[in-house]
Length: 328
Figure 1 (cartoon, rainbow, N blue to C red):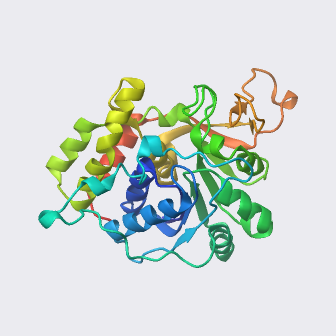
Figure 2: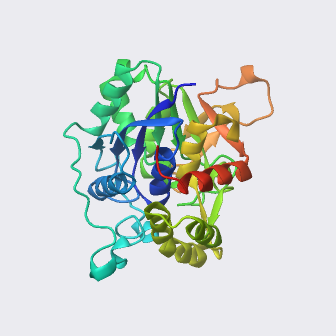
């Protein structure tokens, strides 16, 4: 079976960084492009982080990084730097190499001149029915691409979106998950586009948890540049999560979205009609799925394929095995 060709739209972000590492360590995926969007951090920082990850992993060939939207479609940007750190990667400037030089120097790779929405549409149009778009952040770039190039975007094979909460509470408000809350207007446009979408909500991502003990075991097994980065970037976050939830675990939200692109059998999927609340109130960004036990003809037709169960053990085994080896 030929590898799956993907674009990764991302706002790195610690779990975004782990997802990128997983993607580049997976021979079943070919990353055609990375596009950045404002979300966990401002878009300039997200772009810098994506370039840093590329230089660290050093895939061949190296895909372009295109800069995307700096603001949501309508509402002001609210980042998650209190969670991910000012740099989005757990304050990596704390770590020094021998001689006192930064362990993670500023990346030298320059982003592409083409804006992210245009690059997304161009890559998809160049290979009709072949490209899977994996969205790990707010959906602003995707919405802009749909608005600007609907014919080209209709050629996408699938869109895999990490976002939403179907039967569980939100993680940024009581009802909303961060990515969809950050730009609910973009999410609404995407969900009503008619494009083939698979949603990876908190219902499944919060069942795949990374612990400090697992990371320490990985580093003891293989102490590589990548595994050292995984330990460094997550170190601060474990403390944040303990203060916030009382648990020293990190949910692998974005890596699971990449995992589904690698192996769809990791999850069970249910077709559902899902809407996004865009109003200015406590339910803003909330996903409302029609799960009523009535005949389908009484409901709106499904617009998303929604992951509702995950084989957490099998995914964690895949994730840990892949981060322990260099990219192909």
